[in-house]
Image (cartoon, rainbow over all chains, first blue to last red; front, side, top):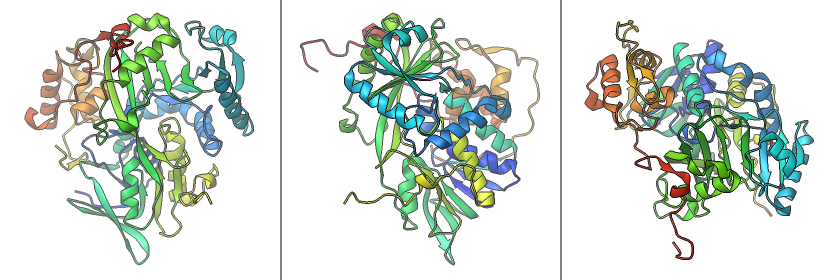
Amino acid sequence: MKKNAEVVIVGGGIIGCATAYYLARQGVDVIVLEGSDHIGNGGSSRNGGGVRQSGRDVRELPLVMYGIKNLWPHLSDELEVDCEYHQDGNLRLGKNEKHAEILTKLANSAKSVGLDVRMIDGDEVRQINPYLSHEVTVASWCPTDGHANPLTTTLGYYKMARRLGVTFISGEAVKTLRTVKGKIRRVITDNNTYEGESVLVAAGLDSRDILTSVGIDIPMTNSLLEALVTEAEPHMFDQMLGTAEADFYGHQTKHGSFVFGGSSGLERYNKDNGTQATSSKTASCICRGIMKYFPDLAGAKIVRTWAGWMDASSDGVPSLGKVDEIPGLYVACAFNGHGFGIAPAAGEQLAKLIVTGITDVDLHELRYDRYKAKI
Amino acid sequence: MNAVNDRSRDIGPFIPAPDDEMLICRCEEITKGEIRKAVHDGMWTMTEIRRYLRTGMGLCQGQTCAKLVKGIVARELGISPAELEPATSRVPMRPIEMRIFANEAKEGEGV
């Protein structure tokens, strides 16, 4: 089994798979180590499929805007898989004055970096999506947002990277990293030691423990998300939906099913919150939420529910880029539950950073060492 | 299981077979050939096959085809079906209408 490569990537999620693909396309020799038995088994397969810019923090907006402009439009052709990418806009919904305030603030900050997003009233919302109930009185509308299928996109990157010669090894949970003469070198699991000239840690929440072994600490914690999917329904709408309070989101897939994510507000306090399990309360609560927005869906049947961890950082945006103290070490973690849409851009730019030392998009705001105490 | 699984292990080329058009997952209309090709694309676990092709994601949630899919994947990988873990079963057991599923607590009765 291969144990040495130019680049060792820790984490076989969409970030690891995408970076491996873009590296391999430039002829770089790569090993990807996935801790679980399945490629893309964390947030990459458990998210709601949003490919959106609106609602994001301005620090990560330039990167996702770059991806939506340059990578998403031709991704299905490139990966030879149907990513089911739809660019039909995102409605971020509100029901009251407080929501209107949140949405207006988000829209204004997004506009400041050049995003086409505007505030619309309830009537205009229902012109765009006539199925939405009259509870919705305000929304932000970003026509260049959309959604895609996280499962086929993640596994598509894996398939193509593997085809280009990347070695993927699953069931290899990385425990520690080791430097040799001040440079990153060894990647150690319970079973084996791997060596690379560069190492990228893209292991979601587990990145924190792994990076601690070389003295780097990124303040993040786990946060449970739950989602559900209905049986296939007749086509209703193509937009991505979210809410002002980010407590509910979803879309209709190409297959016809509706994928909705949401929360009961009790996730942090679940009895079994050591595992990423669904609780008996959340799915029912999501259903009540859906029916308030879409009364027509009351008869749609739920076929499956699931849960996943988000890697939530203390300031809500990822840590992405080069670690100065340890030459050869790179990080990409703490995507805070909105890592899917930004993943192609993150992977492509990380590959460029590893190969050339520079990026097209300024990643300065996403530095791993930006976290400071409040006073 | 969590066993080390090197996805570069040589499993030989994909060889077309006369029964590749046979429907295996009836809910999502996935054929034997599509499942075999997915294995050669690197989908080596039941979970990956399901996420890649939608086998077992339809109305029956794999209660009809899971065993058949497992047999096909195992044969393609040259391993015993017993070495393949089934994909995770998920709530609810049967498809439930949203208006019913929403009633986990009756109003006024607490939770």
